[in-house]
Amino acid sequence: MTTVTRLLRTADELATGTFDRAFKAAHNPWRHLGALAFLCLVLVVLSGMVAYALYDTSVSGAYQSGLRLQNDPSGLGRLLRGLHRYGADACMLLTLLHLAREVLRGHFRGVRWFSWLTGIPLLWLLWIAGITGLWLLWDERAIFSVTATAEWLQALPLSGELLARNFLTADTLNDRFFSLIMFVHIGMPLLVLAAMWVHVQRVSRVRIWPPRSLTRASLAMLALLALVVPVLSLGPANTGHVLQRLSIDWFFQFLHPLVDLLSAQITWLLAAVLTLGLALLPLLPARDDRPRVAARVDPANCNGCTRCVADCPFGAVTMVARTDASRHPAQAQVDSALCAACGICVGACPSATPFRRGDAIVSGIEMPQTPIAALRRELQRKLGALNGAKKIVVFGCRQASDFDALADAATAVLTLECAAMLPPSFLEYAMHLGASGVLIAGCRESDCEFRLGDRWVNERLLGQREPRLRKSAPVHRIELAWSGRDMLYAGAAVTRLRSRVLHSTGPDAHHREGIHTK
Image (cartoon, rainbow, N blue to C red; front, side, top):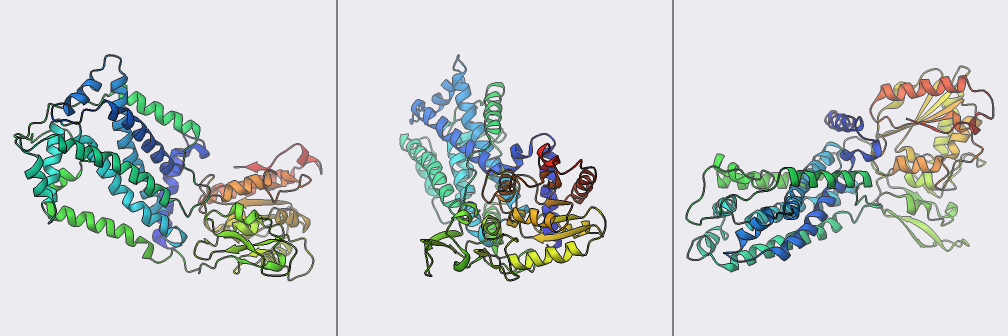
């Protein structure tokens, strides 16, 4: 990793760790920013559908529509209006935080470039939807925003002057204006939904919805905020008078004070530079010098089981007709443009077992830079060089940290692209060769660099996913440490594992203890 990338990842892990102290790892909202943004978008769309039925798209009725909801004695109107407004604000905030986190983690290059580029227009679509919604209230804040936006548009040879001349004077303002704004306000969320569908097309098993606990908590928080701090309209809009001092919605009206502080032209320039800069991020050099080599299929060892297809986090593996004379009807095929070179498919392959005879074993799907035969030889060599009564083997994820610092006379460290690249049979093979215990160390729980690695490792070792760890395996000698860059955490896991196997009561201990996860 480069120094800059290492610092960015460290900053993200600090934020993640802070939230982990208050939430379970799988329910940490910092890990579900995109899903939470989608939840808020759905809430805004649903509440907007109800609000639309109650809205009067006329000059005389627009302001009164918001006022009726605000003054509804039952409080339901206030709840509806608050959920719609605060949901929109939360959606924009969460989208920005999601973007910032993806930048911190470097998720804008490689196989993720498509998702990154298709996500950038979402920001502008959300902004247009939000600011036009504020205009529909047609209060003093709305007339200020419309006027300021028209002045901003006048800096371009577009329609800013036309907007001001045709709609924003007392003589020309008519119901067509509100019909037009309503059309835009409704159309933008629909475009957002379509853009989000495109945004996740190259990602398998997308986490569209946050965990139920987060969903319930988020909805409850927004509902409470809507009732305790109700959204209130200012005075009715006056086309002949615009207030100079008033409160604004900073999530959608931030451009207005920026234009006043700088100028319309400079604000346009900043917006263009920022958008272009985000779009060009995928062209930045990779964070390390290791070339990305896509997985390769060996038809002679592929039985068409489809496990690699099911486990690939980016949909890079598909099944096609056989290219040889095998009795199996299909074989795997890798799309190199979609392959992240994570090796998760290797860990899913039933032929990727070190117990096969011969030195030149080949798996049905391999990572060319780390073939299964080479991994087995490295394990044999490093484990054979250890001294001491209790030898520990650490399989560490390259994306999480450099675990070579854990190596010593009694500890061997083998580095993998992802923890899920390791077939469960390698754990038993290491113990067959004399290892007293095996530690798998990787990215923080529910925060795998390749999205699904920790999940697949847990399910394979618990016997919930193929290839499974055998029930007869001594699980008390296996430890999982989702430590990320926290080397103290990983070191403590090695110490804990060595202490446990040192005080193991006998060969049947695994029947009383499960795999230890920290």
